[in-house]
Amino acid sequence: MLQKTLSRQGKLMSKIYKWQVILLVAFVGIVIMFMMLPTVIGEGQNLADIENELTNNIADRLDELDLSELEEFEKILNGGKVYEGGAGQLIEDIISGRYSSNPEEVFDLILTLLGVSVKGMLPLLITLVAIAIIFSVLKGLSSGFMSQSTSELIYFVCYSAMIVLLMTSIAGLVKTTVDTIASMSKLMNIVFPILVTLVTSLGGVVSAGVYQPMMAILSVGGSSIINAFVLPCFIATMVLSIVGYISNNVKLEKLTKFFKTAGGVVLGCVFSLFMTFVTIQGITGAVADNISVKSAKFAISSYVPILGGYLSDGFDLVLASVVLVKNSVGMCSVLIMISIVLAPVINITIFLLGLRLISGIIEPIGDKRMSEILYAISDNLTLLIVAILGMAFMFFLMVGLVIMSCNMGV
Image (tube, rainbow, N blue to C red; front, side, top):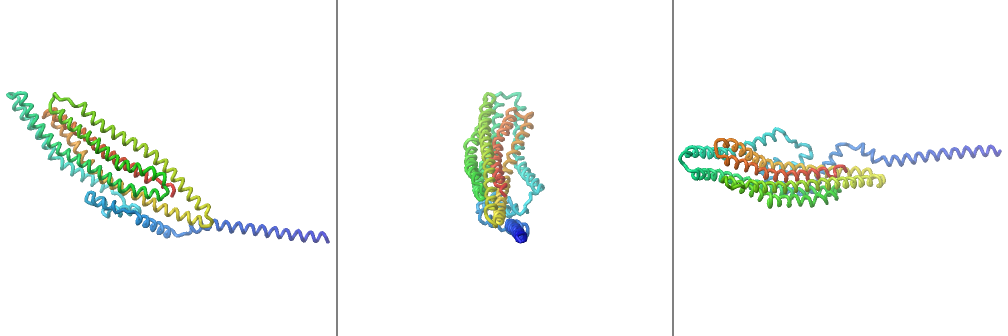
């Protein structure tokens, strides 16, 4: 009797144990299903719905940005020929992938600018050669019966005519350089606040703290250094070169090289220090911000029960929309900057090469000093090209770092 009772109790305990195991397994299964529910729903979500939501987020981000100044600047610049639909349309086309740079159009544009520059230079170059030929003819006719002082007088008259023509063109190049630097500074003042705002909205607090003062230094300090020091150095080199080749008795070559070297060294130091500091600080800030964004995403998905996956996916879509807008604004500003810089650089380069060509042509037919002054002036013009390209390169560096910032968090 006792054995039967014990046997029944054992069977009952066995059944209870089995039901406990079944209930435990069912409970664990339900918990796992709830944990995987956001992921399952996310995987089953229609791709078209995700694209629509991303498109709506992008449209919202663009509506929140004030692009009126950038669009107005783009319209004024070069008669509004940067992009047919304006800066806002350019940003939208870059985001959607509709914009693509056609190499043939770029090549045609460069050829057009080269043709315009050469056509504008031809009258001056022909006149310089004509003056050298006239001087050679007069010197040959008068060599048998005119004194040395008379020959020097003829040289001074021809030399003065050449200098007047050259200085008129060079004054235009200096004005072009000043206007180009001012346009670049204005574009920086318009674009950089937009980019810093977008970086901050992505959680790039450290990067924004680095970029904001450096952008101000670049837009204001860079142009101020070029206008206050580099351009005066260039003008000094031009004046000293002109005076130094009036007579064989005046030697100013070393002083001319000093001012040219001083302007180049200042530009080199400013560019090097700026690039080194911005690159190191920008990369460090970008890494710190990416870690912060990833930590925030992990916290949302891990510590918010059940809905954490939904919130994390929504957070990704918002970040993706802001990143696309940020990078598109950066690319738009780069294209506008290229349109600002391209024509002046080509114009100065063609002028420089033209003077060197004429210097070689008139060397055997004119006075040696005429050939040397043309070559010296062309050599001094490199300072203007370096100033424009250096300013543009620092802008490209800043925009490139901003484009790379906070992208890893998405």
